Length: 258
Image (tube, rainbow, N blue to C red):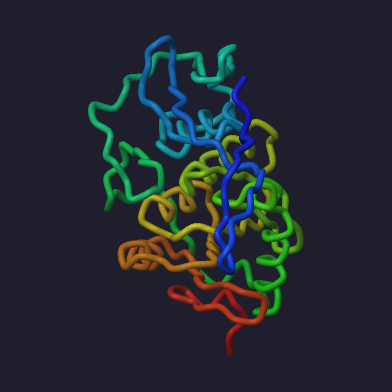
């Protein structure tokens, strides 16, 4: 089985001298997805929570709606393939579009396709101070990042605590893992706030909408298309979030503004 981190040795040059160092780095590896015995695609990912990533990817792509449709999901002995068996026949999308996600994300959902969800009104209402607290909890939950660096973390919160955490070299993979973990553990809080260390591009916004999360927070920036889509779906999109500051790019009525 492939592990999510690997021991490495490197040489550091600092203050006009060389020093040897031993450390660990994050693993990036190809893992194929097989659905009902047919190979669909290959993820470039960090090999942890692979079952959840496969199920969550199929959910976020609209292939399945419930964990009840999944007969079996398992990672092969060598860790380079995830088999998902559904209780019905499904047809593989005719084409996969490469997204702007790190490590070459793929989706069959068209960029401007409307997810069948929209959020109206000002609920859930979150005080500005809570945004910084949620971001701090995300940073505290970064287990792999503290050990290796070079990895994205995303989390699902109910506004008070972190419920689910996922880490991966690909930011889009983290939201697939969260979707899969929600399905496999039946954790669907009434208030859903997604927090991520990754940039918010269109496919990240689509996955948040698919997870029915009306608030999406990132420590970095959104793209122009993700802001447009957030307005369309009614999602509160927050970027550059830190303990005492953040930017609200759409639907600011949920963040306790006067």
